[in-house]
Each structure stands twice: as C-alpha cells, then as structure tokens.
Length: 248
Image 1 (spheres, rainbow, N blue to C red):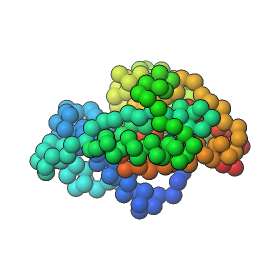
Image 2 (spheres, rainbow, N blue to C red):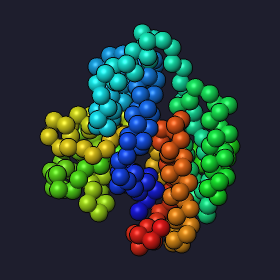
Image 3 (cartoon, one colour):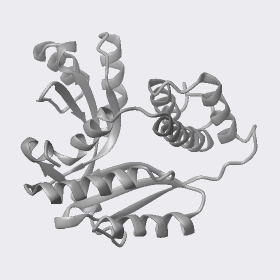
C-alpha cells in the first residue's frame, strides 16, 4: 500500500480516544484560524476556510469551537499568529517524509521535529531535499459500496478528475488541485458520501518496504510526527506490502 493513502487508512483505523480527538480538534482549529486570517471569515468567499470547516464538522467539532476559531482568525477574539511551515527529511531505508505544520514558534517546532526524526531512526533534512519527489494532488476517498465504478467515473471525470482507482474497499479519485472544488461539488450534488477529501502531497516514486521491523520503525516515526501539536499533515513515499503490514 502506498505511503500517502496507506498512512491515512492507518490513522482512520486507530481507536478514537479523547486525547486523540482533542488533538485533532486543536489542529483543525489552527487551520480555521489561519484560513480566516488569510482570506476572511466568510466561508462562501474563502475556499480554504470552507474546506477547513468541512473537515472540522466531519471530525464532530462543536459549532461554537468552529465559530471561535474563525473569530480568532479575523481578530475578533484577539490575535493568533500561526504560520505555515514545511519540513522535509528521511525515515529509515531512505523513505522520504514531508511534514506540513502550523506554528507560532519555528524555534520550538524545528528542534522538536529534528528530535522526533532522530529518535525514530530518521533525519530532518534541508529545505527541498525531498519536496521534488512529491506532487500536489486533490484526492477523494469513497467507500466502494457507496457507488459503482461506472457511475463514479462518469461523475468524477466529467467534473474534471484525472483518475478513479480502487484500493481494496476504497475508491480513490484524484484531480488537479485547480479542479478540486468542482469535483467536490459534483460528488456532493450526486449524493456520494466522501470519507476524506483534501489537496495532499502524492509521491512520484515509492520505496518498497519488505522487512517487518523496518516497517514498524517507519510507522512509529509517522505516528510520532503526526502526534506533534504543530503538525498538520505527514506524507511519505513508503510502500508496505499487506502481509508485512499485518506483522508490523
């Protein structure tokens, strides 16, 4: 299974604890704050804010919490100075890792992530060391029993999607980022429920991982990075076989 979708599946499969839910809400609130600060507090006029709110609602974040995050972004509830930061590095076996963060203190975040990489058997690299291995793509995942291939292909491709593929029991629809909003609306209009949707970093090439211990080490590093409060998304180009994954 490829790194960008595989890690998302692993996270969805984890038991939802109060601590994990609270961490997720905190990260989503940061996204809302940054989106509102950059483009205003009206989601009808700010696509980034609309997508952040959609994700927050999908995570069952309370409406009051969403509203307060918007107000923090627009300055109504005081200043919140988060900025986007991108960190790049390697996991064991040369697996490329990209980390998207929202931080109010780069001098804290960078050393924290460096330590996590090193403790996980990896290494934080310089800017640009692995970014060239990834391409931004819009990706939607849909349960296979939601819709048949012919109908999904017709709707998605007509709306501007590039590809529709089946990954076990999940349809994956990929688009150019410019077509993301149009495809998202077309799926909604057709009544197709989307499990996840976002513009993500997709690896152009993959590193095959066949050793159970190596796979476990990579997944522990991914989990540790993902659990950091400043980290929004983690992407990697590992490809772990199902039989190895079951033992990792």
